[in-house]
Image (cartoon, rainbow, N blue to C red; front, side, top):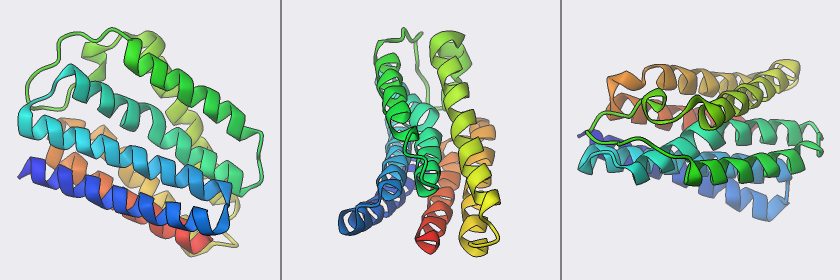
Length: 203
């Protein structure tokens, strides 16, 4: 059941990312591309959850989960919010960050990963650079999303409220990782749906 829920969450996030890609191709708005990439990363993180729940966690599935869910999702969300506000200087900085995140996720030594419970990053990765980069990236990305949403909530009350709800659900899901893949997958699917709805209403 946990594997099925995680796989369903991956399909939901991927479908929503595809919807944003279609909108980006039609409008060529850069924020739509950033949001699509963020939900695509969310889909990869869910797929890694499904992998871990079905066959047990391994170094490969943990690296995929940490890269997509821990390093990329929130910063790409924040990039989309900044691009929506016309902060184009955020794009090259985000590209450098993403390249660094991919390199660290591939090269950083990981201690043995096994079992079917979601691995605790503090037990498998050194604080610097992998966990430090995740803290910085998630903090900056979340501040950007929440800051832009709050600053413009008067003009877009429903859309921004949905985005804030999606961020809150994602944060709660991350805080409750110890409850297992099923609960985390449900939070990912719900957060992705809320964020997508907010993005669409804001466009």
